[in-house]
Amino acid sequence: MIIATNWKAYVESVEKAKKISTLAKRLASRSSHEIIIAPPATFLGLLAEKNHSKVSFMAQDISSMTGGAHTGEITASMARNSGASYVLVGHSERRTMGENNELVTKKLQHILAQGLTPVLCVGESERDEDGSYLTFLREEITDVFEPLTRKERLQVVIAYEPIWAIGKKASESITVADLTEMVLYIRKILTEFLSGRATNNVRVLYGGSVEPNNIRTLAEGSGIDGFLIGHASVELESFSALVKELEV
Ligand code: PEP
Image (tube, rainbow, N blue to C red; front, side, top):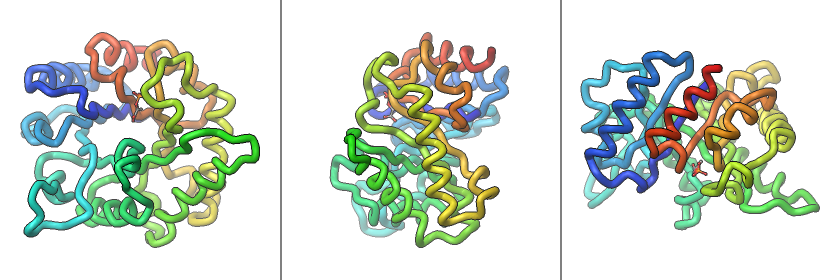
């Protein structure tokens, strides 16, 4: 499984960043899972430089522009040169700042052009009885997948992150039954872009209040390929517990 962690802006000091990164490397050396960490951009190069561990690094976001006179922008090429192999794109916290599917697609194409793996975040803000959240999700995936080639589509990792489940407690996270249904639905959407068997090669992660006490239940039988974890990944004890829970 993939255990991808998103440090957001929770980690603001170099000391804390180094501590979590060292722990991630130690956990990865003994784990059968792929551990990916996404430090803030200012720490990425520092932590990923000369990385010979099994940990992979991820940028939390990149610019929709390529290199040039763009003060403050962090391009996909910079992320690659700083040691990232994955990039988060379309996270709901970016979308609330105005990112739409068009911008997300542009970023995703820059990520792919640099040979990096995009982790595309999708997910509805709320659930309604008439099912329009399903249409919303379909559009988020369709708008991005449509312009891509078959090879590119297979490189995208999808992180299903229902916004209503982000940043809460495990008890408020999704149920296994609902997650199982959503993973099937996402793979069904993908059949519009890939042959049935190939859709199984697109990795689908779940994110939204994953904590040590629900990670195993969510992993078992839901059909996901891993997790994207926020708040529980930035405390040493809970990060360690998350990885250990999946080793059993
Ligand atoms: C996220 O925002 O990507 C996330 C999964 O956050 P949390 O685990 O804190 O819900």
